[in-house]
Length: 198
Image 1 (cartoon, rainbow, N blue to C red):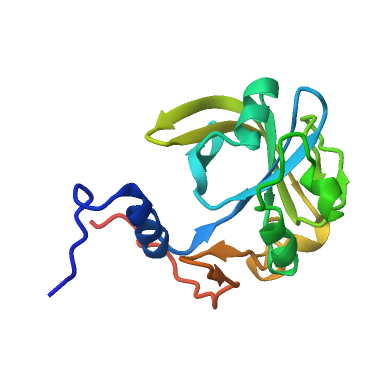
Image 2 (cartoon, rainbow, N blue to C red; image 1 turned 180 degrees about the vertical axis):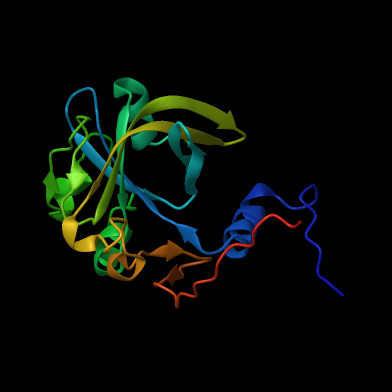
């Protein structure tokens, strides 16, 4: 017999940890933005995915209205930097509640570099940076789904495999689990997708 958690009977503060412990692992969008005043911001978001392949659109969800969202609404641009195992401590540290107008990049000594197509900087040590312009923001309950049109994907060459695509093993991506748990790169199994049944 299963334990059933009824969404209508539990307060939202109790349902949030239930969802984040159930929907696992979640990739992390380490989002860099810049404010209208030119202050860089960096924060991790674990509600992150691809919205569309053609045209390429990525999305992340901000639970509440945070600096990343405000900056994106003001400038129309952002970068999703891939969060990796060697960067775990910095990714976690950048989730702290810094005051508005404080740059996490500066406070934490995280090296950045100019992006190719947007004004928001890239995290220099991140193997993959997805540069995007604002597609739309969708308000859902207490959260905001931020969708971005991908204008460039910048990959450091040492993370590319022989086929020209990023190597999962080399990237060593992080994920978020429930509570204070983080996921490290898992074992990988390769299996071909089936064809159309005749």
